[in-house]
Amino acid sequence: MRTTYRVAIVTGASAGVGRATAVEFARRGMAVGLVSRNEERLTAAAKDVEAAGGHPLVLPCDVASPGEVEGAAQHAEDVLGPIDVWVNNAMTTVFAPFHDIEADEFRRATEVTYLGAVHGTMSALRRMRKRNAGTIVQVGSALAYRAIPLQSAYCGSKHAMRGFTDSIRTELLHDKSSVWITMVHLPAMNTPQFEWCRNKLPHHPQPVPPIYQPEVAAEAIVWASTRRRREVYVGAPTYLTIQANKIGATIIDRYLAKTGFKSQQMDEAAKPRPDDLFESVDGDFAAHGRFDSRSKDRSVVSNVLRAASDLAGL
Image (spheres, rainbow, N blue to C red):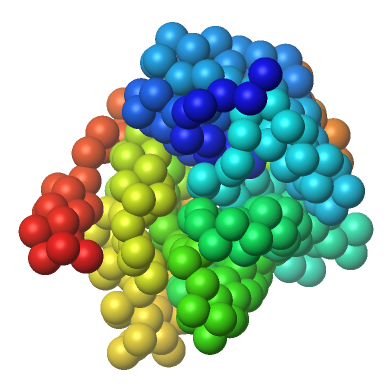
C-alpha cells in the first residue's frame, strides 16, 4: 500500500552515515527506503527507523548494478509513493598506496562509490524530472577537493562525483527544472568503514582527527534536502581544508606526504579480517565506529552557517 508520507531513499543505509541519516529522516515522520547489500543490517536499520517514528522499506541492492538500483527505485515508488529525496551515500574503499592496489580492487571501489551515485541519480531523475519535483543529495567529502595519500580510489571517486554533480546541476538549471541537486561535504567520520573496508596497510586504519559522529552529518544531509544550496560543508575542518587547498595546494601536497601515512593508521597492527569490497561483511555494525571517545557530537561552525542561511532565506 502506498503511503501518504514524504519519501526519502538512502543508499548505504545499513550502517554509518547512511543509517544515521535514515533515522534523521524518520524523526520527521518520513517513509525511508533503505538501500544496501546487507539485508540483515537493513532489517536492523528498519527497526531504528520505526523507533524514530518513520516508515521503513528494506531494499537490498548493490548500487554498482544499475539494474538493481532501478528495480529498488521502482519498488520504492510502488510501495511508498513518489520519491521526494534521494541520498547517494554508499561507499567502499581500499586503504593502501596506489602501487599496492589491484585493478579489480580499484574498479570495484569506483563502481560502488562513484558509479553507485551515478546509478542512483539516474533512477531518481527518471522519476523526479517527470514530476518536476524532488531533491538529490550527494554525500561528498573534503576529499572531493583535497585528495590524501592511501585513499586514491575513494578520493578519485569523490572528485568524480563532484564534477558529475556540477554538470547535472547546470542541465537542470538550463531546463528551468524545479528538481534540485546538492552535495554535502563531510569531515572525518566515526563510522564502521574502518572495520570492514579493505586494508593493505601494516596498521589498522583510522579517520584523520578531528572526528565527528555520523549524526552530525545526518543533520546536515536532511537539512540540505529541504534547501536549495549548491553545496554544504560539515565541520570547520571541511571548510578550512577546501579553502586552504585553493591557495596552497603545493604546500599541502608536501605536508600530506610527511604526515598522511601515519595520521591514517592506529598504533594497533592490522589483523586479517573480512572486508566488504566484493562481498558484504556480516554483523550489525550500526551507525558508529570504534572512535566514540575521540569524536565530536556537534559542529558549531555547521550550526552557525545553517542558522545564518535560514535567516537569510536561502
